[in-house]
Image 1 (cartoon, rainbow, N blue to C red):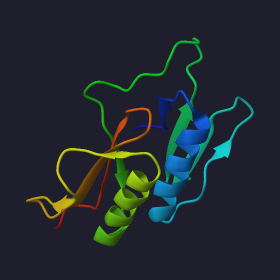
Image 2: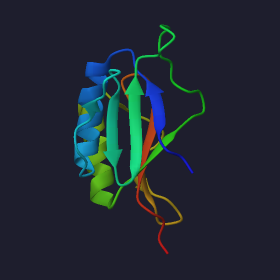
Image 3: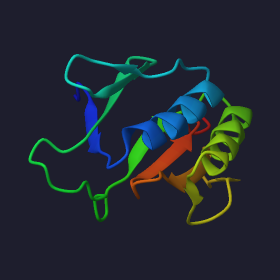
Image 4: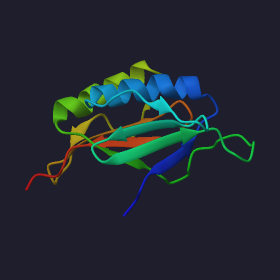
Amino acid sequence: MFTHVMIGSNDLEQARGFYDATFAALGGRPGKLDDKGRLIYNHEGGRLMITKPIDGNRATAANGGTIGIAAASRDHVLAWHEAGTTHGGTAIESPPAERPNGAFVAYLRDPDGNKLTARTRPAK
């Protein structure tokens, strides 16, 4: 359904440190800058793009929005959470935990305040 998710950042170098670390924890590669100065992360068929807002205003986090990132295992979720908190992210909601459906889930806010979750697929 989606081609990508784009979020704003007020500090692309700080965002790069956070996202490079969290995607590495999931087995992904560092982001690349495109010719418009946007950071682009491709991982398991999805694309996350990070940019300074084109209108020149400050980037703000979506109120009520969450970006979900697929993780292959519980260990990947835990590594993602650790990498995020080590690189400027903030742990939010509950500690990483298994949900009733069997999915293992963790939540963070990135340095710009965007809400993210890494999660495994629910148990079948």
